[in-house]
Image 1 (tube, rainbow over the protein chains, first blue to last red):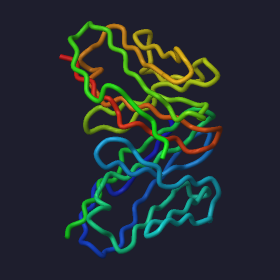
Image 2: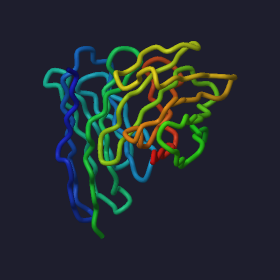
Image 3: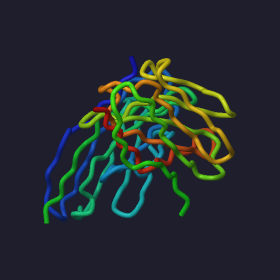
Length: 110
Length: 113
């Protein structure tokens, strides 16, 4: 059975801290890995990763994929209260399907 | 910025009633999805739709569920006879092309009483 596991389940940090969120997976047909941020309702897209070792960056956020060890990390530097959200990892398996992890709930305190 | 639009934002229905959840995907997108998220649980895949037919569906998507693209813009999810356990947030998503990222709507919170 395909599986996507995120850790930690929740995290509380102070503004300015750096956090690393983890996503490991076991799937039969890996196509890509995506990170989403879910604040109140809709997941909003952050990154899509298909190749190992290539870091994707957007401002204070960055992510990298290791297809040999079957995991990805999402880094957030200099955290702000606006980063408080649930961060979701999703794997595209096959052609038309994403499998989501349970998410990491991040709370950034002022 | 183009976005996926879902209506209604919240629907309360009696057990056994039919509901139709509506979505307007981003206009040049070709792949459409329905996902659901039961409160406190993970986002679960229901069904994908491409070229006017279902591409893939999960075990959750049984005979009580159906999808339609009745015209060039709307994409609907129908639940024929709702059960209490159908209570969840239902997300519509669309993608421009194969292996591009999916954009999600704001969701419809369905409450079955």
